[in-house]
Image (cartoon, rainbow, N blue to C red; front, side, top):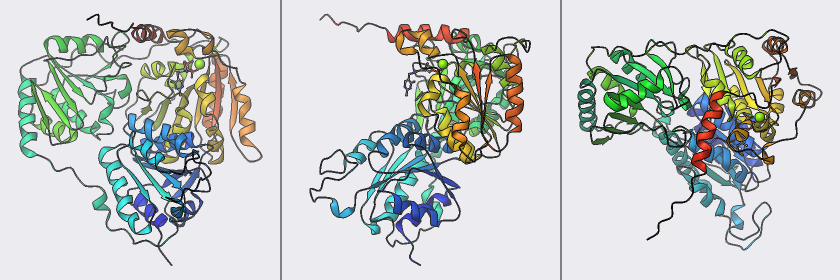
Length: 564
Ligand SMILES: C/C(NCc1cnc(C)nc1N)=C(/S)[C@H](O)COP(=O)(O)OP(=O)(O)O
Ligand SMILES: [Mg+2]
């Protein structure tokens, strides 16, 4: 039995732990899909389109550690680039985008091929991908496959960022060597001990100079696999710990030091005062922050300067020095050993607690009541997806049981992401209850993947927030373009079910109807439940309005005219 190029790719990805991969068929990838199916240690999962396929892979990488999606040339791959590469790069996720590509005999012949842009060159796709991933390879001969496949996987795992691979449609089924051991795919970074020791020494001294130490945890602790090491340092220091909005659930909120989220004027709990005081006159330890325009509320809330110890995945900046040559995890673990055990008493009051009075069952459903009821569902094995929009603010104010995970896409911010990504995450972690909070505007971009949740019988509960339009945009800058055709979202489910599905579509216009719909959703284990939560168009969190106005004014800055 010959071992083929496609089987090599399958074996390598199964070796790094994948149990599933995602695909949309096309004539440039059918032979490859056949080869991937020969490997019985994983499943081939299908998507409705390539944008969703890329997001499903991104979601799988969130819950399972890495992912692959397979699409056809150009008409498939260029859609998938948005999600599988751009989004995954922005969100630090190891996703391999694989595209079938033209028959190797066509290269250099002047042939014009279908699905291309109609020129005689086919390298443009790989060139496009080079801009938004860490490694790309093109395979037109079987003998080059092992080295090129290993390289893209190795780079993707080392940098926790996406990579791109294309394979000629006449090569995937050709004979190929078998792979060597997995270890060469996952090289450990060589630690520069001298630099690590110097950085730890400097940081411990820096921290020791103040009795007002506050930690601020950012989203990069997750791709750096440093969440546990962050808790170890917090335990040793006994200091107050705050999180950035994009790092919701990256630090346990039942921890004695937890004090809320820092997000400038829309911070929760004591976080704003704690962070800004420490930045002014204490020590502010920032672990994996991503200070973009949204996180800094339009550049108005960006604590920087001489009192900051900045720890990034591969760099540490402290007291005017800059160190590299070790990982965040190594640095945090060594620092936890080094700092004095004298705990910096965790400042401020306890962590903020969601405090919303329950509505009466007959009351019209509100954003607060919906948030309260969803918050009551959270358990240590829940994964809550919060779509771009007011869902960010609703998730941020919820209380997280330790182990509960929140997924957001606050860097890429592609509306519609949560449905396909939630689908992929649920495939990758079938033992976790997946809840998705998705706005009506977002849902209209990628809702087809609810049909795939029906197909794979995933008991995902979708809270479709029907506020008749782009609420966040209306708050930032209103206009006719923020209003959408209002669908009967609950009525979609019978359509997605076809003859065989078990999806449930329910309408909730009152608090009681939502309670009842949630009960039905929790009981529905053989398919998704979509609950259309109808709320007033102007019913959004105060924080969204405050934040939106600031961001809008920053977006509106006039160009600086340099009159020389
Ligand atoms: C249109 C847009 N952003 C612009 C945008 C447009 N296209 C893509 C792919 N991504 C984007 N973020 C955004 S945030 C809408 O308010 C989302 O509306 P919805 O899902 O209904 O949520 P809210 O009502 O809570 O705002
Ligand atoms: Mg909306």
